[in-house]
Length: 331
Length: 197
Image (cartoon, rainbow over all chains, first blue to last red):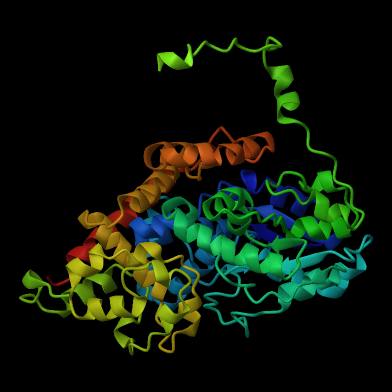
């Protein structure tokens, strides 16, 4: 059992619950123990840095300080969200490179009774732990139900291999590492040229035209290459491609249907976990048909009305009477 | 691109202001104007100026034009430019610095974008965590009411699939976090004051 400090990030208890649930389901077979940082705070996403760069780094530094204090016999901090990962890694790296910044951050941390020594925590993305520490052979050895016949896009997104301030990656634009992991699950991996292209981040919020254009680029390429679904390592990518796909379709008058699942969900499926234990079915663009083609049965979604019924007052069968709009001639 | 009242100031004053707003070394002063950044940028087509042009404008002291440009706000912070830049300039960090100066000076080209950041940060200061439901509700009602009918099915889907938590999580060390952020803001203000005008 290898133990790591864990920074889940806000979305894992919200829009990316399926990521958290599927990760929990595969920890035991992978021999990983994650120890959540106590009372961690939001990493600020892109928003705190936008208003106050130093404040954004101080926000992140509190998490690094808490991780250092907690220790738990390890100095490796794992983040499953690519944006959290970059924010944590960047603050640590910049504070190491610039002692003046380190001093400023410790000045700020002192106001909250904390301190952080730059470089004392090693920040890594969850994908790196699985590939580098657990290893592909060990992962392949746990595969009980190979994803044979499932054409999967290895959509890594921007922020695992970039900005790579610690220079740990040889390929920033077309790394093969995610391909190899999915291949170890038995999946048929699509050679996807846009594997590290941007999903648009918060553009779906602040500049929808830009966001939809970037989402379409990815979904269109995946569709043209005959993918059954996309795999992701990032809650933001999942949210954009899954939750905003319908609005993107309406925007362009297109009809794409490209499901996107977290890589932990695919690992769980290959390890033999039932789909419902992995949060499969909570995606907005359903992966049910795609998984059904390789013999993985996902239970039909409950009708929203039926699910909500017990909590509500029973409606009158006929509903409200339709108000009369008068005769056509009256208008 | 002339800036009448700015030419009287030292042209490198704005460069100093941008550098002071970038917590780590940005290396912006090493830019060789090769244009690799704009050629790599996935949202360059939607920008007023390419990143290359913005860096030239910063170094020419065109403060008003830079702060009025939507370029930093269209940056998706994907770092493709950053890993390709032959001068290893921390390009997205320069964009963050310009956005912070613009938002403080009240000259943002897009009030919607900065308000999204403010609502997001407001939730962090209030709870210590992000609060997706509260953020989305306030932001869409205020700025994108016409998108609401279109995204309603997605919102309902997110709710019925249990992907939205309605109760914000408040961290225990909120007072400590607020003290840290207040101190950081004071240090940042002192950094700004130290820049020669």
